[in-house]
Length: 474
Image 1 (cartoon, helix red, strand yellow):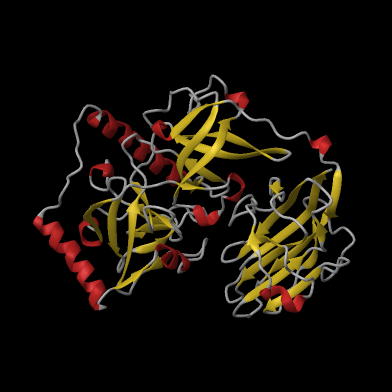
Image 2 (tube, rainbow, N blue to C red):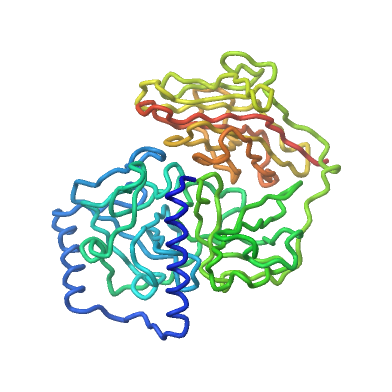
């Protein structure tokens, strides 16, 4: 981290402590109605959208305007984005920011809003409907490359690749709240299915627990000055899956002990400071309910039947595994062999870098798998990336695909809840998919790895795939 950034962070956090101590005993209430002036302002925005004078964009559309790692994007057109606040700085775990998502329930996308306002929960309370007039603001990252796309007020004076808060003078001219406060319903997500699309949304995870090594520990390590990341886990098939809960040293629950049992957790999905890891951030500990017994993974020795195993070690050039399909639906890029110098082994790689193709869609489909000869099956694989921004990798299953590439798009494909490396995460490190249960499927199945990218941007989307295995039980 740059020295001037460290000084800035320290000053901000000291200020935060002073502000929290001043309001500890204050009695704040969220206003049920707005003043006439604020009502008129937001109604004018809504009327302008209806008349076409302002264009309403979804949060997803707004985020698609910006490519992670690029310079900040100044919004020069009259566009507006609408959302519902899902975070609160009341407990001190968020600071001079709030997150909003596009719907109170089952959101598609969410985004961070950085603003120069402390105790923003008094104005932008959880569930509050908010319109942001974007002309003159910026979309980018407060820490370049962190993968957490943010609405800000200006370009940083110390780093032109980063943005700073919407200033106190900008807030009333750009951020408008309505009288509506909705109930935010956390979206239930499969633990292994959390990915970059969930950043900025409020989710719930079931059957989770903190790492057994953390028994007796608090949310924040007392030796840490800023944030502490604590591991939570769940049982997925033959092993554990894990995520990190990140808590600020300045949160009011920093010294509370972590629960020892299992249960549910509701949190905002975010990224750590460097953008290397996906993290969960709590509004407060009321969103943690863990009163159940912990689970244990299934015994691996009972799943010794291998229905599929491919590590690509014998491949060179275009991937040409026996009875697999390497199909270009759009563009000129195929899955190719790649030697990982870090892992010292071969893998399959796909990208759209500098292809010049308007669209790249490439499939890598396994040979057929008979799911009727075993009682339960688990798929696993590993992924890595290099410049994954702007592209997507999905794993899908079909039981009505006939094995002919001409029928790929007429078959029914279902996205599996696998953990796939996200944009900028663990660069050059491999992420395990966890174990995906296939026991709900029967007959002859095919597994597909579908890549979608765009070659018009340099460094657009490289993914690596390795160690595809299906373990089964008699």
